[in-house]
Amino acid sequence: EPEVTQTPSHQVTQMGQEVILRCVPISNHLYFYWYRQILGQKVEFLVSFYNNEISEKSEIFDDQFSVERPDGSNFTLKIRSTKLEDSAMYFCASRPWTETDTQYFGPGTRLTVL
Amino acid sequence: KQEVTQIPAALSVPEGENLVLNCSFTDSAIYNLQWFRQDPGKGLTSLLLIQSSQREQTSGRLNASLDKSSGRSTLYIAASQPGDSATYLCAVKGQNFVFGPGTRLSVLP
Image 1 (cartoon, rainbow over the protein chains, first blue to last red):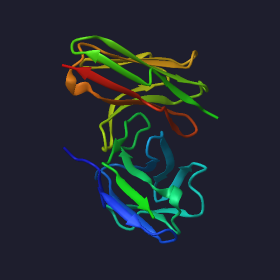
Image 2: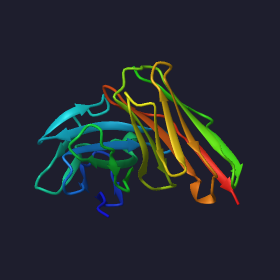
Image 3: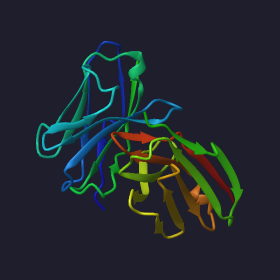
């Protein structure tokens, strides 16, 4: 069964460094998402992406964040200058073309900012 | 601003029991509501999605209902099994996606 994959599974970085988290959505899906979950807290929506542009974003998704679909398969989340509070689990999700369809989540990337 | 709450925060039941998890949301202007399970250290697995025009959805031993006007959804799990042990999250899609804090379920053999 097709699944969403994410790399790396765990990323450790120093405060102020740039990180890129990578996701490979399910191949025929058209909508892509990033979420984060700080340890012990709720899952939070960051951004949705469709037709090569951001369709929705939350207040969390400020100028430090960007997303890109550099080729036909990858979907990336970049954090330009990481802060301690960016430490979290980051989940990528994708879904097919209709609004009624469910989202399929990847296993997540644990980001630790030191 | 949409707020989603879930009751109870944690639940422990013996195997075989039927149980109900509750989700409440403050803004009834939603497109859909989705229930997920999350296993420790893992991603989310979608269980059921209910459109705003629907009242319930069923999948196997799971049944989810939606009462949009009162801002409530319930997830009913029949004949619980130890493999059902996980955290169950509800999420509503309105202007954005908003998740609840989850209910941590333990089913004891």
